[in-house]
Structures are given as C-alpha cells and as structure tokens.
Length: 450
Image 1 (tube, one colour):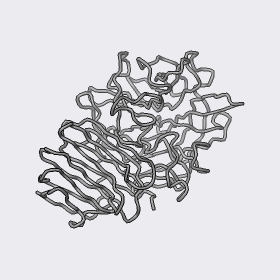
Image 2 (cartoon, rainbow, N blue to C red):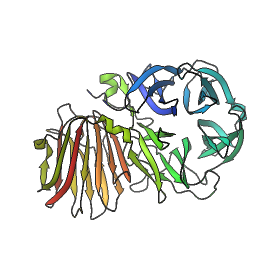
Image 3 (tube, one colour):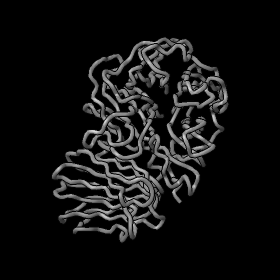
Image 4 (cartoon, rainbow, N blue to C red):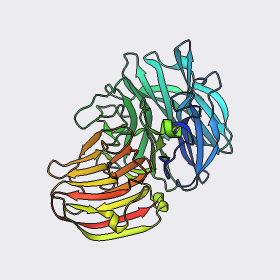
C-alpha cells in the first residue's frame, strides 16, 4: 500500500545512505546501504542499481557484503570514481572487536560494473591521526588540481565533529592533509561531499548533535553545506539543504550533461517507527535526483530534467479563481502519485494546499506572506511520524510537488527551498484542495499523473 512507485525503495529490509553514485560508460550506477535481514541498522551491504536515464532502474547483484576482517560489521558509506576504465568503490569497513571500534577506508574495483573485487584497506585503523576517534568514515573521492582528494567525516578526541582531507597520486597510497572545518559541528560530522559550480564551490556534510535554533536544525540530525573552496580555512556558515523531516546523507555526482546532481536518503538515523516495518517489511527510500547550482552563496536544487519522463496524463488550468477554497478533484486533479506545479502572482494572504486529503486526514503546505514563512504540516497526514517544519521565504512564486505513495517532495521558487517528508495516508485519501483567506487568482496549474 505504501511502497513508493517512482522513488527507489528496497524490496525488503532497511535502506539508508546512497553510495557510489556515478555516470560510467553511458549508465548511471547507484548503490545504497542495505540491510537485507531486517529493518534495523545492522549488517550493512551495498545494494546496486543501474539506469540509462535515472528513471528506469535495473537491480544488479549486491556489490559489497560485510564478510571480511576489515568490514565484518558493515560495509559503510562511500563513493565511486573511474580510473583507467575501471570502476573504483571506496567505503568504510566497520569492525568491532570486543566492543572496540575499528575503522578502515577500503577499496573494491570492477571492470564490468557488476562484479567487484575487494582490495582491502587503503587507510588502516592505525593510520588515523591521534587527534581523532575511530568514528572516521564515509570517503568521498574526487580530483582537484590533478590530485585525488578524499574527504572523510571525523570526530575529534574532544567528541566534536569535523571533516578531514587525505590526498593521493594513484588512489592506493593516501596521506593525511588537514582538517577543513572551523568550529564544532555537533559530536560527529559524516557523509562529506564537495562540489564546484563555475567559480563557486561548496562543502556538503551531515553533522550530528547540532542544537535547534528557531526554524533551523529541528530534525534529529542535519544535512547541509558551507559555501567555500576546499583549501579555505575560515568561519563556516552552515545551511540546511532540506527544510522537511526526512533528508540525510546526500551524495552528489556528475550526470550525462556534466551537471552536479544530488540524491539523498529519505530517512533519519535512529527513527525506525515507520508503519511500513510491521505491515510491509521495508523502511525508507531515496529522494528524487536534484540538479544543483550555486547562486548568491546558496545551493539551488531543481528536480532533474529526466524526471519529466515520468509524466503521463496532463491537466492544465489557467486563471483559476480561489474563493476561500477550491477542490481540484472537480478538474480531475487528484491521486496517489503525481507531479503538481502551481504558479502564483502576488500573494496577499495566507494560502494552504491540502495534499492526499481524505475524510479525516491531509498533509498541509502553507505560505504566509505577512510573516514570510512557508510551512509543511504532517500532524494530520495519517500514520507515521508527526510534526511541523517552517522556513523563511520572502515570496512564493511557484510550487512543484512530487507525490508518491508514502513520500512528498516540495520544491519552492524553482528550487530556492525544498521540503521532503514521509507520509502514510490511507489509500483512498486522494484529494487536493487550495484554501485562502482572501479571493485570489492562480495564473496556471499543471498536473501530471505518474
């Protein structure tokens, strides 16, 4: 009933971090953390999918299993890079001996993109600098100025989070270079990434233990970025990537158009009380792919252009008047899985869009132009977690919503802000309504069944 239709979702068990995202030999390869044995965070494998267009995915054999001395307690997150026509996967081997953690940065290679040969650790547990604990993980590999770089999530011995960099000439021999975060980011910072967009650059990472401040940092853990060059050392201003509930451990890659693309985990660590566990024996999905641009010290996230291939039946409305409330179902705009685009002119009073509305439930997105706030409310969404998330927004020009059976992704103002959430409504809750305190006109609505 809740198994997502067009988001990547496991057949069974637990899905978490996306790993090893790469466009290689004309195909996209995507791996993710997978526990095939239960819906708990244990025995992490690397599940493997490939696609020619980011839409239709083929399931391949599991790429990595936790069965060697250097990864026996989990093949943790990492990334992929091509060298000499060979696909290289880097990941963290998690090991616990008598309750004592060990951490190994490991390599596996493949010539055909299907069968992977483990080469073992390239950075051993004993090579971790003394300033850091064994919470040292999630290697992201890229080339910068002709040198291979590895950014890693780390925890200092004073139990604060940071990011470090290793360098290599050949992907085999790695040397510690430096720490690159100024200040403390909770008790651990993980899943680092680095992107460049023209003359701009950003470091992405997921800190754990950052305290909430007003509308910011209200999830258990955060994922975000600082606008900066890799070599810079300065005070960092951390910005959340997503304003919703379930968004964590994102990873980027270059697509067929040489654009930066992000896919994240539509889940949150330590939150396992989702209704799909008991009813359907699976938990969590991945977000849709988002194209990234850096504009005016901000990352703009837009749905990838290939997602238009999902579109089926189309309904378009123009100059629609909303007099307190408008039920879009009378225009054949409703459903379980769809894309909805609404363009606005100047909004003078609060508006609400009720999604997956049924007799007793709905998910509400609202914008208030007086206080300049956008809000996602899932307190009445049905089963599952509840809550409200809010962000500042000077004006609302457009909303683009991707609704799946148990998830929603809402893009505001062509990607200025994004809200992501898991929701679990009843199957017959299909309505869409728009509400307003004042009469107003919507210039254009586009609806596509998926």
